[in-house]
Length: 257
Length: 257
Image 1 (cartoon, helix red, strand yellow):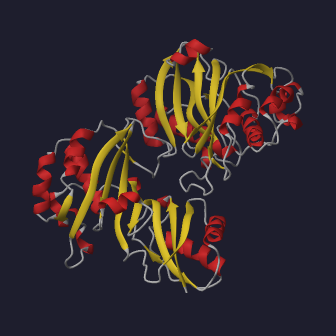
Image 2 (cartoon, rainbow over the protein chains, first blue to last red):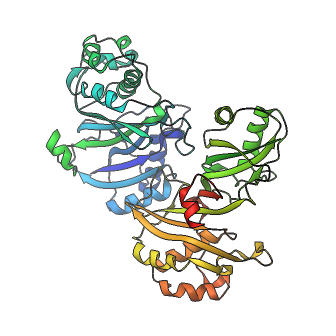
Image 3 (cartoon, rainbow over the protein chains, first blue to last red):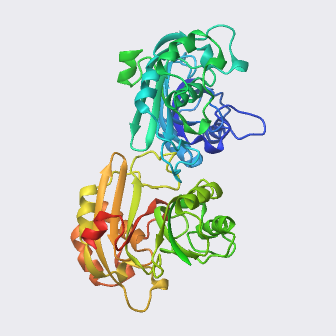
């Protein structure tokens, strides 16, 4: 059996996240149907993470085993013929038998995008949060820097899906930047808790408008209480940006993880 | 009666162009319904141009007369509450009584965008043409430069909508540039014939792959025959980018028109 790693990108606007759900269209459902049509056999997909309804992915990794000998390049080509326009197959490679898109993952990078203009952007519907008042990016960036390092991120986790232990994560990139009218929060970590990025963003927005000071973030983390943080920002601005694997082609991964 | 000029932007993916059409959703239909709901009176809209199904606008101008005293800023705000997410009101100003969004227009700028990568972009479905083979931008740009100046553009006009005379237009900007994987054709003129930009693009693509040389463009123009040019490129990559009026805020307008 070959073990294949396929990377895709998708606009999540019309999907209920990655994971198969009853009575709702998921990226997995659509991808699996395209793949099985091409391979003419059942496959069991391992996705690198769950993503919420409306969340996008500039890079999402899927691994699966197949008995078929189809060349990697042909599979990418075929997938792009069968997938709808809002899901694109980007690459395919053969990986060792033990590779698993989720368990082998060493880290992920998310980007949250905010359109920061009085008037909304007709081209960013469902693709960025619209925030009409000027954001204090310097202040937000200072706050974001306090996420760096290894912490118990209970404060930044929606309660009902907490796993028993294991709420510690290492954040190795956390910054807020502006490019014209677009404000971006980029955060990379060895793993993320449920809603972690969206609660971070909701908190950073409150930092911008003065409800919290950047220096309160460490105390907020220490409290290990969801109520200490700001609200959960909407899904539409969130992008899974990169997925890191050991020995992956990403130079940065090797240096930082 | 006040005469108002409203500028909007829209993602044209789900619209059958600007103009009201029977049994098809147009931007005008949607805009008019939002506007009349706010003003609580019938209005007659003057749009700056027809646009085809699936064509987008980063700037589209509409003028109309109203008896209402609503401040311009409030109208923009209200429009953005009533318009769907893929149409945004950008600005509103009071203009002289004789101003007409179409007849007062001194020129327009269109941009045509091409995603030039082997793999398509999940975020540019309906928003850019996907061209998988590397484009020769230098060659395309050289060809585009021959569109500059005053010419009879019959060759670049779909036949069945030609107006009797008046097929001369002055092109004052025409260039092809690359920004990463995105190739852009930018063209500004005092007016455009039906499908003119899309036929120019179809021709530039043929220039890239060697069917025409850039130096053949002047002869192609002289033939005044649609058959001399390349095919009509799809609508999805086309954006109305700017609309120029005398005395407008656009410095460039004053200098170039």
